[in-house]
Amino acid sequence: MDLGIAGRSALVCASSKGLGRACAVSLAREGAAVTLVARGAEALEATAQDIRRETGARVLTVAADITTPAGRAAVLAVCGEPDILVTNAGGPKPGDFRDWDRDAWIAALDANMLTPIALIKATLDTMLARRFGRIVNITSAAVKAPIDILGLSNGARSGLTGFVAGLARKTVVRNVTINNLLPGPFETDRLMETARLWSRQSGKTEDVVLAERRASNPAGRFGTPAEFGDACAYLCSAQAGFITGQNLLLDGGNYPGTF
Ligand code: NAP
Image 1 (cartoon, rainbow, N blue to C red):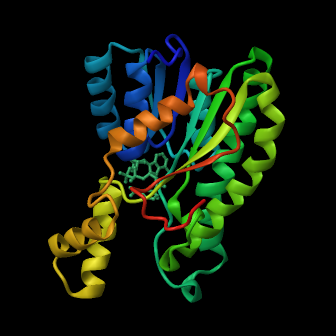
Image 2: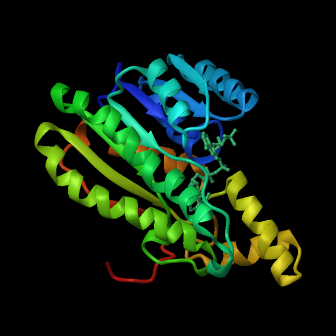
């Protein structure tokens, strides 16, 4: 299926590794020009080279912290007025809510709620004027089924989800859709970091906790970043103009509810 986005431009945030990188790869394979963002320049350039080599797409890079106003200004100065926006940033640290002061909450809200909203604000009006826009926010399965140790993530991402639910119904009339992708467990650096925490907490080796987590998922495995990237590319496709305000859970069936 041709997704109809060849020649479109995409800003993909937090994209030198993991899920963001996979979204950029899938969009570039469809012929979109992509702007990649991450703080670490080395991994960012290596990813850009890989994507150029594999897809022949135009790939720009900005080494910046997307959660800061200065970082966002630098990114927007390079990518111009994108047709496609994929928002993403690192997730907040796990812990106990008794240990989180106001600064911890503000940092989580900045990264996982206010940064996506600022990027939407900066790019939406041009998309509306052009009558094409696709916005995908990478959130988390924790929005649908909260994870106790990830209270900062549960809270901040739910705030974004509520905001987007209202806005997405206002923009679709001009063919600008806004949707959220909710990753369950995907095999990325972030998951491996979390595995180290599970290992310390349980006294089991990382290999054992990872095997247990894989086995406890109905799919018997973790998701692959490529599966996530292709779902993102579909939501950004020309064909997906009637899908807006949705929260698409990619978790191998882990969430047990009927809806
Ligand atoms: P990852 O493999 O650790 O990759 C994170 C990427 O984001 C890297 O390229 C990193 O590069 C970049 N990044 C992080 N903070 C940034 C910032 N402030 N500004 C710019 N770039 C930044 O993580 P992932 O697994 O892809 O996770 C992506 C998001 O999905 C996270 O919010 C995570 O919490 C959420 N999530 C993941 C899973 C999972 O199973 N993987 C499940 C649920 C939710 P630099 O460090 O160089 O900046």
